[in-house]
Length: 212
Image 1 (cartoon, helix red, strand yellow):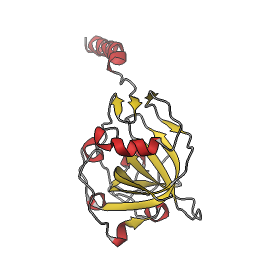
Image 2 (cartoon, rainbow, N blue to C red):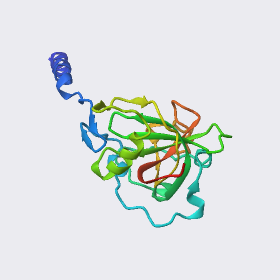
Image 3 (cartoon, rainbow, N blue to C red):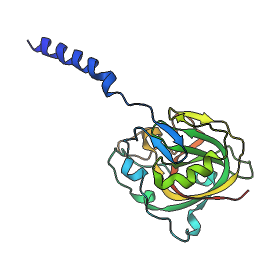
Image 4 (tube, rainbow, N blue to C red):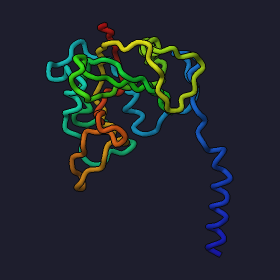
């Protein structure tokens, strides 16, 4: 009897899967987004606290400096609030080398040092919400994007590679960082899919200044 119930449950789950699958999101313009948002630490990722008027000197960073930060510690779950360095306001200055649309509507910017001497990269994320419309307009302006655009993960070709400063809170991207070797230990500040990119990033971006 038990095996029959398990089989029936499995069949029902498979039948419901297409209905439960997320629809791809869509940008109809830089300010109009329709679709699903992310789940992992989403309340942290859309923290809309306004940036302070000034950033402390030790938080004025280049991508290589952020890349050299110590990694996060232990397991960070979907509802884990900001903690430790995740409460620090950063100002990250570098040259934009990639703009990636992600499935949850985030725009992922990758920056490198302006002098080009380091291969290290660091990221900054612009969420899909209306609060971030001005910064999406700026970022999309570096591409030849034609709306509407589906938000499956993809890299948009850049027509400009500006030097910018972005301001926002630090965010440890635990989804894309390697596991620690010991329970509760420090994890490497590297992305599992790209060892040249920091797992620490700015998320969400609250200010962009184009320098050149």
